[in-house]
Image 1: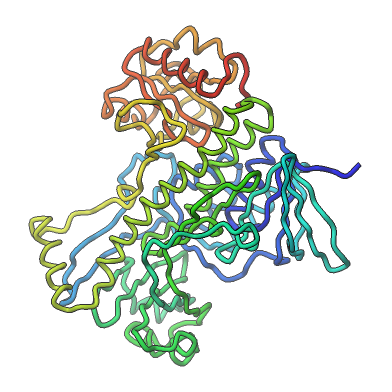
Image 2: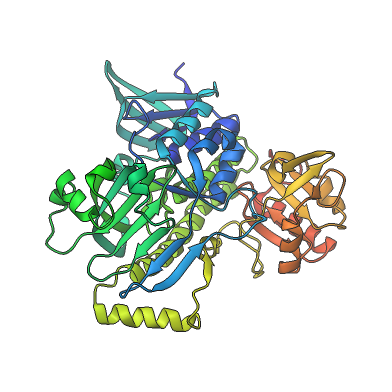
Length: 517
């Protein structure tokens, strides 16, 4: 009999490999096809954040990727006349997610570490150097026609995820349109491996040059990697700008060819696009196949991994039979509801940052500078990058209006006996009811095998830095019901409210006795 996989994934970039890893880790059978035979050797993404590192921790690769990551330096914004108008930093320690909040990284090395982890999973089949040529679906599953070097074969799966990039073949064949969020600009992206002579010439922090003549960005990457994103003027030929000669002319403000080696120079149109629908029948879109945003906060890859994380636990719950019938359909539909709203809101905020950087009118740019300095009383204050990220506003969330609902729950360091571990290493990554110190576990919640109670302050979970305790005090609650993707379903102010919160979730999902974690 022909094998039918639980999930087929088209595309093996960051979103695809994370989806494959999470689904494989959940025990599902997964098929992946990818056109390229190796990891793409040129870095496209350059930044990630602590939410993504928490996912890498879940996959067991946090230590493997650490050598290729470094803390993100502050980003300083300079206005028309060279004055500092804004500074973006990271939140101060103790870090809320148990990892450095903002990092730069070397993408090819990190992707290789992720692929090596997936290769350890016998239930995940990966075909490289092949092309998905046609996708079809019916009520029972999805069929992919896959062309190889020696012919063609068909792969069948119950569900499929398109992680095949901005020009997604799956999205195109299924006629799933993109919505334009009104941003379209030509930019040149340049990666340079800078030598010691060149490094001595460059700023020690990342810089946004908010200059009407030519807005541009300098990002300090890992080790001697530096990236420039340079706005192209109307009438400039993007292809000509990407030649080595033209690129060095644009970099002449900072470096000469004797100061380093061009790693990559490529012209792009920075877009703001989002898929109208994220699900069609048994097919889901994720990563660049579902959305594209300008790079001003370095969230492109992070958004794709958030997609994969959100969708994977929901697909796993449905495929294992934890959630069935109409509730299963509602759970899967919540993926698009949650992620589309989140992407649209974050893209709006990214566009606002872009508007600060990209004002071309000198008079308006000076007005911008004056306004931003007036807003901070003439003293530029640090703005943590994490303050820009929105919470979930709709989807699988408790029917309450509490500010913590839909936010990312912290991951404190805990003492489990003498051993210091991050919370997820102790409590796992399923549904968790996290209780503030001194709070008893509700009797009904304690009886549910699909829910893990984490009672802070007990011998098995003594917090070392007060991160979660401060979170409970700030939000004036004593319990948080945390989803498998670490977002807060809802909070409670008393033990009775926590019991009711768990019961409400169980009714919403249609589970009482069993739900795998």
